Amino acid sequence: GLFHSLFLGLILFFVFYYFNLKLIAIAVLIGYTSHLLMDGLTKEGVLFFTPFSSLRLKGFIRTGSFFEYLLFFVLIILVVVQIRFMI
Image (cartoon, rainbow, N blue to C red; front, side, top):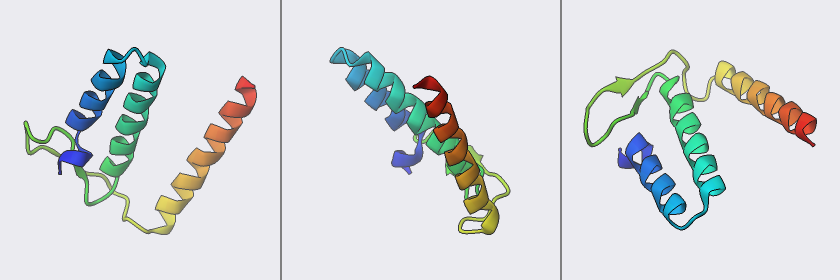
């Protein structure tokens, strides 16, 4: 629904940006968009452009499957390694 569309992410971005919280605005937009893209990889998919379009982004990963958990842990490791190199 609306909570899993880019529309709400953009609203949050502009609210934070309006209050001069630009770094938080960018972080929210990146996090929200990446979450939607990951949900879009599942077989259930996500209505990315709700309420403007009924286009559903669907993938091949079954929710709760071994592959989903494997992908999750690989991404977590990559993020931790990236953060480690930033410090």
